[in-house]
Image (cartoon, helix red, strand yellow):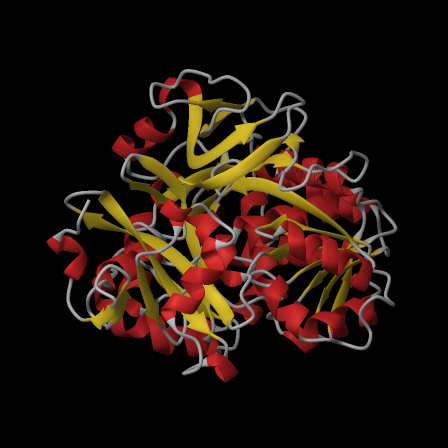
Length: 521
């Protein structure tokens, strides 16, 4: 199924309410008409079938309508991260070959204008708050109806640039079938029906929100798009729109947990789905909020692959079972399937609903899709009943003295301390042990100056094996994250030694890359 067919279905649903963004709302039919006008405005800039246009906007209706509307004409959308700095924006615009950009005045002046002379292929820029020839809303009203062949389900609809936690982002060539298949799979897993209200607080430039919106459209349900996430605003939207289902990231839940809203537990919200929630938080928050948490696994390139389901039992610590219609396995370094219970890399069978590769990047495409399987770079294990347990990103496995240490295990132990607001663990090269464990910790405001690194080590030692306890501890004010909540660990690795850190072996605070000097065996 392609995205144009989604809009045809929406048109047939008429006045049934669909989209709510801020103070504005659209029925299914009104949204279909909005997408048609939006797609026509894009095409009127001269975009030919298969050509790409970029959008740089915060959560608003024009972004979502560009996603469904432009793809339905056979053109390709490039959603851009609104946290980009000019150099990052220039890279994505140039690499994608975008011919048209739709943005607003604030983002254009801050992000695009400083690098405009580096973008000779960018023919036209339209502003949703512009005037004259740059007025996108006026273009929507003036553009003639687009007559074009329906796109194929396997045609590329969107180029989704990865979060770039390891370097320059890669542009994943994402087909129409990715959003329709995964949207339906999500509906099935979380039990979303036509009478439900689904809320996303994530950026619309992200695969998660785009799949959520498509699935909600297909279900005939209502979609609430929060302009941005805030602790109080979350419950405001839940109560105002009688939200029944909502997605989350692990980084969102602690913020909501710390903010005791008097309305929580007395709303229509009954299902929350996402990734990164600890078992302890799940068991504590479900009765408090009156919801059922469903942990899932997926990625930009493949969508929803593994999921707990509303109609299945859950296993503690598990992200669920394989989504019907997908083939997911655990393999070793030679791509051989491993026995149940053995850790390995998650791979997903190539099918119409997963990435077609990376734009202008044959090397990474071949590596990621080798043998007909998408290699996720994530480590997990599977039990005898088919439940998967996410362990860590392969690149976040710390190999100390022959032991594999999942950074997520160490992070969970440290974050459980009342004085800790956030934590990330990284490997530091060591000539004797191979790698050492370093914890980069954000203390709660009232704990600064009262908690020492050895306090955190003692706490961790009661919860994890001794070889996992961090040798190095560094305190920071915050941890840089991507717009989708991923900690940018490459920055932490690069910054090792730039700030003071505590070395357990030395029993002191030190400066400089002491970890490279070695340590006693």
